[in-house]
Every structure is written in structure tokens, then in C-alpha cells.
Length: 92
Image 1: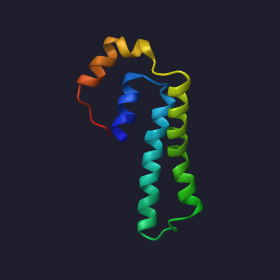
Image 2: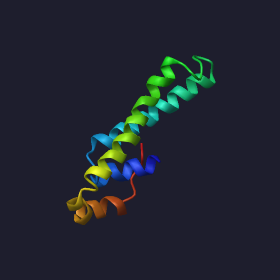
Image 3: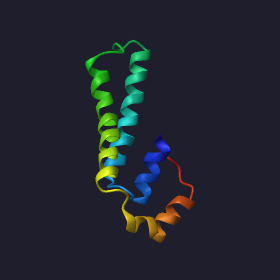
Image 4: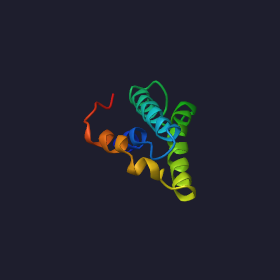
């Protein structure tokens, strides 16, 4: 799922705010899970709920955006989008 966010971010097929929210939310979710694993807070807590909100907004927002607007068609045909997919880049 991180790869999907990264590709959508680099190719600008959707507004950059959506994949950015998903990438930030993924980090927050992993941090929340690690904190829960080490007993810093419960699995069902306010911290966990707050950490999952960006992922929920990302998933819902992407679905609504794609149904309402679809992909950014100029980004599909641009040379920058094609080279962004061809060049391997680190995720972090």
C-alpha cells in the first residue's frame, strides 16, 4: 500500500495532499502499533484512534476523489510521470 501512495505522489495522478496524508498516516499507524506492542498504551485507546485517522481519511478521500474526478489525465500522458515510474528511488 505504501508503494501505491508513493506512485500516486510522484506521478501527480491525484492531488499530492492525498498520498502525503496516506504516507504520514502510515508512519503514525506503525508508531502506534509499536507503542501498543511495548505497552505504552492499549490497542484500543485514544492514541491509536488518532493515529488511524489519517489512514481513514486517505482511504475515504482517495475513493471519493477517484469517483468524482478520476485520475489527472494530463499527468497520465506527461513525460515526467513516465520517468517518475521508471527511475528507482528510495521510499524513505
